[in-house]
Image 1: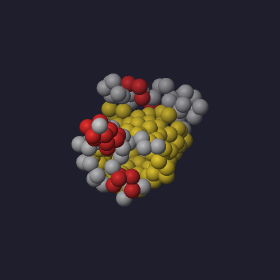
Image 2 (image 1 turned 30 degrees about the vertical axis):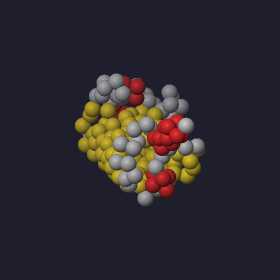
Image 3 (image 1 turned 45 degrees about the vertical axis):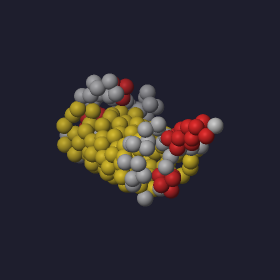
Image 4 (image 1 turned 90 degrees about the horizontal axis):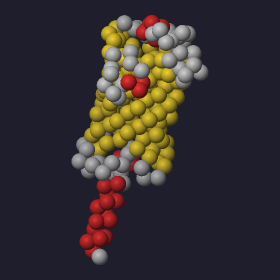
Length: 189
């Protein structure tokens, strides 16, 4: 019976987030990335067509609700400066759902997030205008993020990888959009 109880406690410890992580509600993230001419579904398959366009950005997020022990919901605001072939500023805001429990979190604390919101640019992005599938490029598009983070257990710091996707949602916002493949550092406080 003691062995069974010890095994159950070990499984719960692996499945639940560390207490230190649960107390942190704000995060600031510094990201750098490169523009990809690939479609969103081509990116995970490593068919990435990088362009001479880069980004540097800063985001601030707030975890506003725990949804059970596995998912956290957060609001995020993102400032992104495009340089290279494009020279404009982008502002994005999203609501993100973050999965926080992985069986290996006691070794490498891992999270995965998906989020959606809006992205607005200070001008129509040059590379979006050049894309033949973008018949009417505009400044306002849907914003989609796909993200994974990796850090030491109970650390305030983590490494972030992200796909930053501006989307026309199949013509709802006028055109097909773009992708930026990003990496950076996050600090939770």
